[in-house]
Structure formats: structure tokens, C-alpha cells
Length: 326
Image (cartoon, rainbow, N blue to C red; front, top):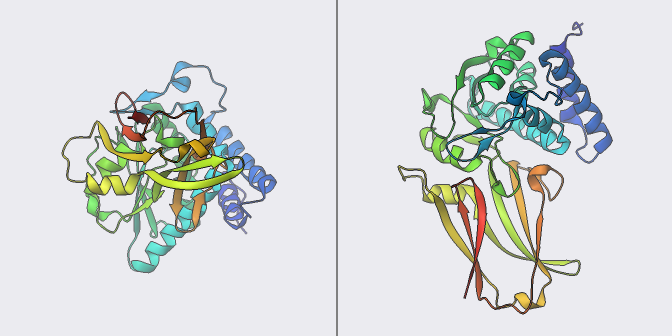
């Protein structure tokens, strides 16, 4: 019988979360609160520390990395953590089927102080089954994560720790990795670094690399009353990155998408959705996570413009911008 240690507790809770119904909010919250309490006890991070290094975001090449407090608090975004865990475990198992005689190597960009997708997942596998390399821009955050991994007895699961900006980082032995995990995003791809990180890292990795989350797409719907009509995808991350994969310099902005306003008068508003495709059937639906919050913009009439253009810019920080066209 397994001794009840924090590692065993996290393993048991992870298995419980994997088997949980994603629509059972009460169960998900209960499991995640238990996990969070273990993390708090081991790291001392409770989200209330007012020391500057716990409160301040760190600037990256473009965009920001979350503060220690915020990064830790993200763990309690219960649908997000649950679906990422389910999707990530499925991705590992799929890679094991494709590479039955190999250790599945994972490059984890942006681990935060809890490194949850090491500390929750590693105990479910043998150290000869999965190996992680961990990158984090925040020196204090990486130091805490490294200590946590050691406290949980998971040191043998981590090959390397890197403290660097993932937007500029060159991965040693990049072709060895099977999975890239980078949960570095926010709704509407605002502020955080998911896009420029993938722009930098994906070309370095093997062509059959699995990325978690697989893709993020910003979609536009027109709305009248309670009815919505899909109009277009205004920004598809993986599509845009394929089109810019040979660029040597990080683009200041990515290709624009134009949406006609010729029929817009009959609608009341437009809704921008952030569709987060975690892995296969695992995805975040509208407003079930802070990552998938919708933005509704009222339509002011009369409309005097023919179209609106959406441009994803990286400077001064990542943001979806719109420009009206005559």
C-alpha cells in the first residue's frame, strides 16, 4: 500500500481529476482546491504575498510573463486545468503508441512556480516513460518550481532547467522532443506570449511535434437578439505561423483579416471568441475559462465603413487590433 505523501496525494488527485466529469463544477473545484493546498504548503505561495517579486509581471521580448501570484492562481481556473491535464495525458499516451520503445520527451515552456504539468503528470508515468525539460523566464519562479519538484521526489523526471525568454531561446537537441507544452496565453491572445513563443520554438522542433494546446483561433460572430451567425476566423495561430515560418525576424504584426460590413446593419453586435483547442476532443468552450472569455462589441448605426480589418500586433505588446476601412 502506498504511503500517503504529497506526491502520492497529487497522483491520486490527478487520477481523480482525469476521471472527473468536466461538467461537474463542484467536483472539479474540490479536487483542485486539495491540490492547491498541497502546492501552497510546499512552496509557501498563497497568492497574498505583497512582495514586489510576487506581484510584478516580467517583460519578455514582446508581451509579459505572469507574476508569481497570478501564475499560481491560474491553477484554480478549474475547467482550464482539468482540460489541459486530460489533453496532455492523452497526448503522451498517443505518442507512446507511435513510439513504443522511446522515452517521450517533453519541452515545457512557461512552467510557473508549481510546474503543474510536471508535478501532476510525472507521478502517473515511469521516469523511463516521460522526461521533461523545463523553461521559465522568471528566475524566482523557476527556483521555486525546481525545489518543489525535488520535494516531490520527481527530480529524475526532469533533464534540464532553463531560465530564459522562450521567444529567443534556442533549444539544445531540439529534434529529440515529442511534445511541446506552452500554456502561455490569455483571452484574445492578449499580452501573453503564446504566439511569439510558438513562432520561435516550432521551427526548431521535429515536424511531427505535438503541441499542447494545439491551436488558438479567434472567431467572429454577428449577433441579433439571442441569435448568432458565424462570420469568419479572424486569427488562426497555426495557420499564420505556417505562413511566416521562414521569416528570420519576429514580425511586428501578422497578416490582417478583412470582414465585410455590408450586412452588419441588421445585427446588434459582434462577438469575438477565443477558441482554445487543447488536444483532439479537449477544448475550452466560450466563457468556461479565463482563456475563453468572449468580447461583445455593440454595432453603432448608421454604419459608414465598408469593412473592418483585424491585425494581430506584437508591439508594444501582443494584442488583436481592428481598423475601420472606407
